[in-house]
Length: 345
Image (cartoon, rainbow, N blue to C red; front, side):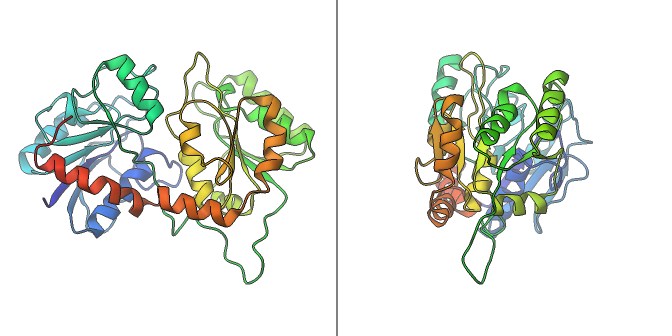
């Protein structure tokens, strides 16, 4: 099997410095599969930057409202020209829902309890066991756990130094300014133990204005460094120097995150993370190696201190084995080959 077509979300252009979610995974998969000798095409919005050797199939201009209106017809036309397997990384999943006979693999990105139907009738993969169980509860169909979350371990890595690799005296919070992400809790916990904190908190649609103002006021009152956004290079430097990533995500009504690419990037830099026991976080964190998972905010301050004492070399090594994009693609490769030969689940 030689041809693989990756269907990207159309919300943002690929290769943007401003956004690093699924879009970055598409670029890494395209790069890694091309290096393995596959002929790779990518259905993506205009303005995208693709790795060398990857063919471009335009899906129109970016659609920030997540509607992806032109994606289905574009995929249909592409299927007439390109055989092979489709990795459908989009939000609307046209490869499986509109063209179910096409050989495809379709990851789901969010908590199935807040997803909007339909889902592909087969070949769905989950990011974690937690998400897989939720998917089965809602959709009553089979799903495999095949984690696509990855990062470039040659880029996200500890800082090079001729002497001892010493961290600076700060922690990092990275996430939008919404109560579910826990920026105020991170500020409160770090302030209580005299720990410096850097907050990277973009304001996104749906973030309550009163909460946004409260976070900014707390940063000012407690001498917390605040950035609304940073470049990829700046984020790397902050991760490399931080004692820990503080990411106290807390969703209501039992909801949760199916994974965390922010934590993965930090781990690869040797920076452990403190997270709440919600969603798939106990699967993401190797307890005592890449971080600490706690039950709630009363344990947050102590967990930050504990996390700062973990072995950064062991953290980076374990993260590379689990989430460097080449290691992840090596796990995907046999499944891709089986789907090319007609496998369904």
